[in-house]
Length: 423
Ligand SMILES: [Zn+2]
Image 1: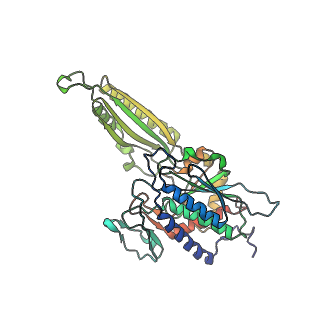
Image 2: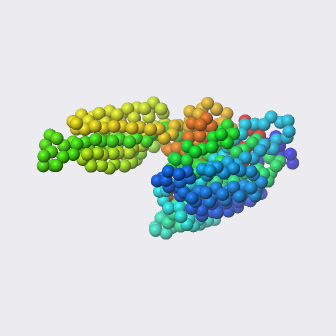
Image 3: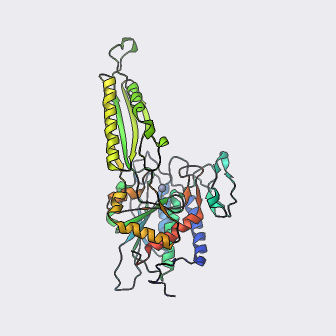
């Protein structure tokens, strides 16, 4: 059968192939999940932990075995390429990239992960060690679930993405009859600490559009995220023996407390969802002489984020007015910007994603990310990068679990995305 150019309405992955693909995804995911790749936010190195090297080297060896050349940079970025297999003389489409991160969140242990596989899920809550309970719900009935044992996270964020990308690559290499453009595979360190991308080997990357496989429930596609700022607020007071303090002491710790109460509670993470932004106090410390607070500020629009930072400045002036002689400084630095700005400049990328989702039989929806991905940072480097679901749930927790059937759908979608003539 010539499956070359007549596939616009037919999926590339047959039912028989799908079963094999599902087995391959599960085998890969379980193998990767067992590797300890927790990143370390206190390290100044990239990668921040040695386990990320272990996974990167394993992936490189695996890709070599599949027949795909790759390069591992001295900061643990693995870049691999699958050349186009279009007949000579055919115009070569743009290179697209798939990206997933090697590290797992440092908020929960990722050491000695024990992935457990539940086939034909029966709908009952799953109780793990330490009383951790998972309730996958009706959508998972009869399907395949993977979870950890309750003492660690699972690491579907983002080893599910890695498993989907490697399986997509292996599928393309094994099915030369599927005609595709050039494809790049990118595995990056330290996404969770937000520190990885400064070492991103931009010069080695030829993709003009990328897709991160770093999302959640099946069907969720993401093309917009927050604009994010980290804000350091410092409070300078004046310390003196409390017995002689009248009219002299300026208590920096109290100034900080006063500042924190000015943050609108209705615009906090716990009071907002959807498209509403927030202020969030992350950390507060100090004494009479000096105090410090660390905040994060999030908003989907640039004007919204500017308004919030201006508000913080005005709170600072109000605290100074209430504590004569005290000084408050607000230092706001961008962490990432809404990737929608870059994606909107190339509407054909979203159209391609939607077409691939339809061809893969994925019931999709677009959802704003109340956070960021490496895609947000790649967008700043000029590479529009939407995010695709992986089927993982409850990320960064001991109750993290993966719906393998969703991961299979993500893999089918990725295969469709590579197809020549889909744009
Ligand atoms: Zn992730």
